[in-house]
Amino acid sequence: MATVPADAAGVRAQLVALLEARAERRRARIVAGLADMGVPAVVEGEDVRASAPGLARRWWRNLALRDVGRGGL
Image 1 (cartoon, rainbow, N blue to C red):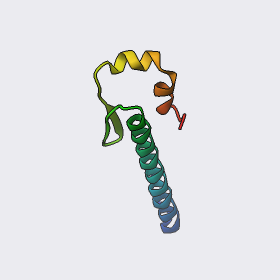
Image 2 (image 1 turned 60 degrees about the horizontal axis):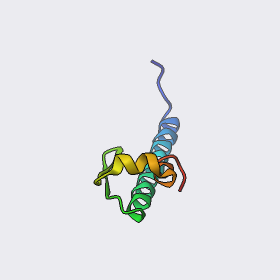
Image 3 (image 1 turned 90 degrees about the horizontal axis):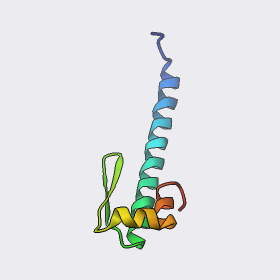
Image 4 (image 1 turned 90 degrees about the vertical axis):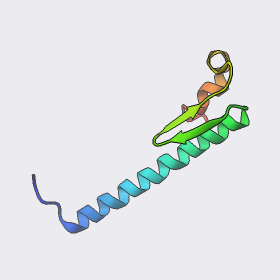
């Protein structure tokens, strides 16, 4: 494997940090959007876990609820 110059490695580290921050903000927006709809959700690692009675039925009935995870925010 080729050696990566130090400045390129620094740029890569900055890009990784920016992408991780962007993903964290997106997960936070998804949790907030679900909370606005009365669906409790938490971030577990890279996943957003939503849990509520009847959530599966609501998911199929409510287009706005599905759009929260698709960038509809």
